[in-house]
Picture 1 (cartoon, helix red, strand yellow):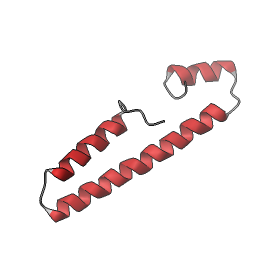
Picture 2: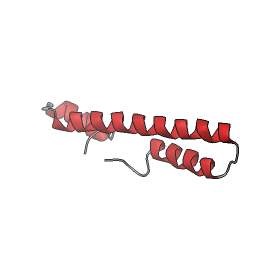
Picture 3: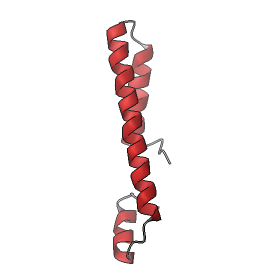
Picture 4: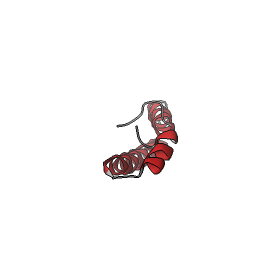
Length: 72
C-alpha cells in the first residue's frame, strides 16, 4: 500500500540517491541506516492503515478518516 507520492517515499528517494553520490563510508552507513528506518516507519504506517481498513467503524469516523487520507 506504499504511496509513491507520500512524504516518506520522497525521503526514501532522497536518502537512497544520496547514498549513490558519496564515497565516504561513514556517511554511506548513516544514509543506509536512515533509509532502513524510513522502511520501518513505512511498514508500521501500512500496518496501521490495514488495521483501520479492517476495523468496523461508525460512518462518521470512517468518513473523517477517509477525508484525512487514512483510508480509501
